Image (cartoon, rainbow, N blue to C red; front, side, top):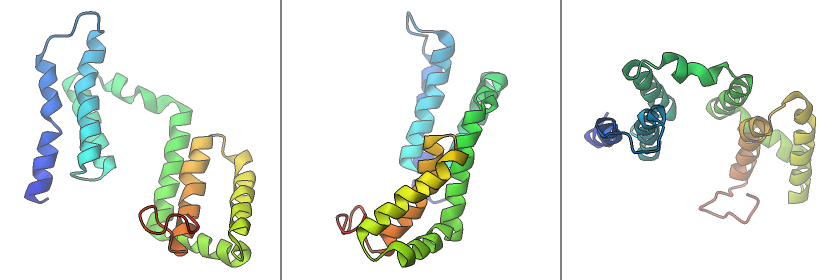
Length: 168
């Protein structure tokens, strides 16, 4: 890591100083203990000294070790919906890493791309087909449909900062 990334990574641990401050009146002490880790994680995601997954694992592990809260830190992972959404985002990352989204996008452009209305119908139809087998709207839209249609927009040279009104 470069010096700049190390500095940004170190800044993310400044909220840990809140652990030295007494709990404000009227606040649950457990919530106050969790607050610095939450703020540190958000700062690290915004400053990006490294990827999101290592940041989350570092702060989750730090909380579990320093607060003896292993069962509390991992309790959210026992909920099935969390794994469903997480799995969809793993699939989305695989779409990006393998360029599968781009390849599917090119197939959809070839099949329906004569007009942008045709691409809209392709989006609606693919969402209709995938909906019965994906119980989470967030998982389906954010993890499966969005990477494909973002790839379509990028293949048609439409980005949020460059030419956003074309087809994106």
